[in-house]
Length: 149
Image (tube, rainbow, N blue to C red; front, side):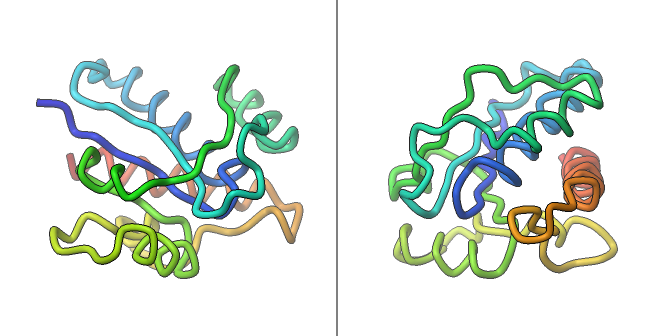
């Protein structure tokens, strides 16, 4: 049975798609593609239908990772039933995810950096423009997540 993982951020154009495609790349390189279903979504409606933000796309491309065809979608209550893990990028995302889902009776809603030795928020490049810091957080979080499963 596949482990189904949904990465979530505010707009689904920076951090969560970076995590989605980094995780897909790590899983592919580990030869474990058959074991996972990986996607990403937003808590807001602001960016629905928009492609991955160009600086995020460029940062992925620097590391040989493509994200062609990805457009932002909003997380739904039904996602809670479908996915095994719903991974937020920061505490604000977690609050909004809980609001969308109503609650988290199965303990599926978690923070990405909680899988690392430095729990907290994934750096938000929307405000800082520092996509390198976001890359480092996302890569470490995804590597630790994959090591766990």
